Image (cartoon, rainbow, N blue to C red; front, side):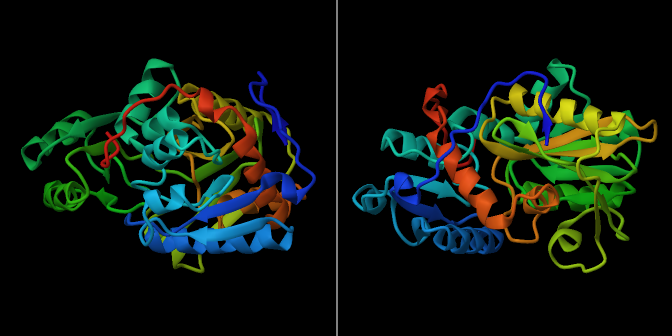
Length: 333
């Protein structure tokens, strides 16, 4: 691991599975990322049980929070992706029930899920990120094209897993992409396209895991490349301490801290032609199948999947209850 320059979080080491009490692994949900969440949650549940944790699946799409409040769980391992799971809504509900949970608190979760808010904070903090404009309707379609030229990346402001995202090369494609993205919400982020490899950096309990370089034969790292293609390559440098690895680590931890995130997560980058890392987003509940990026980085330094799931569960003992409470609506705004 590469330690952050400024230690803001330390590991709460738990050795006895009974110390976790009864654990709900929240999975599934109602977002567009439901199927991915089911895979993540099922893998996590299996891993925790292998380590002796008294863990059970809980799908909030099938059972209400009112039912959950009476179920007697001691803590929650959040494996929900997207709306009502990763955006602060669930975290807010759990805090109201005084139920500890893994990962970031209410405010950080809401901000990280909202790509527009995140980008605004990155820009104000001097964290490099691709140039962008915010579009609320199709009539604004040429603003980004006039500022940055084609190609452009179009994405919904509050979706993950590349859902609703498009790479466009001309005005007709831009119109179609905006219609597609606006189907997921009223706000769309249009970014200048950065041609290069995608880099991802995972963070666990205040420390940075080795970066992973993603190489795909597709035009960009879209949903197909992430979840369906067997031609996507992943290159992990391991414990390398070269200057490039340190640069990514420093920017990743700065972006993570700027949004107020804690516990664990993943920071995604594109590498510009000048070699400068450009932060795309921070994921507070990344994918957790055995073949996902965070487990891949952890495995590279000897943290197997069961130990990783255990350590993420340890983050439920951190101070996410110190998070400033905010009211988060069901659409994450």
